Amino acid sequence: MDTFLDVIQLALCFLALVAPLIIIPCIWKFIDGSKMIRIVIGILLSAVCSFVLFCICEAIGSRPGMGP
Image (tube, rainbow, N blue to C red; front, side):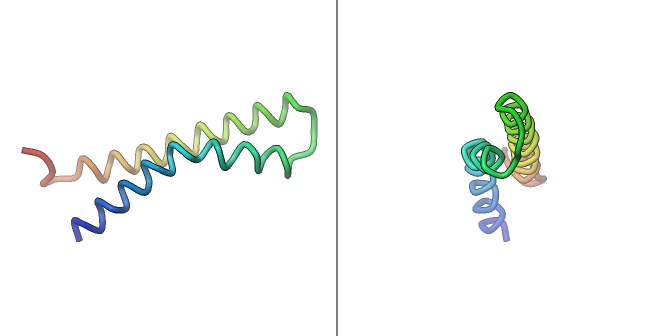
């Protein structure tokens, strides 16, 4: 089970870094409006998504039994 959680943690850390590269083009394509609105929505949604993924990744990494 610990190995599975370590793999999940690694995947979530990678997704936290890649999330803006996925979200911003999707927002740009599917949201109508001015460029400024699309940029702001894309940045805010990317920041929230990356923060949530990073927090989950850190929660898995700091679970009891890890470290010295």
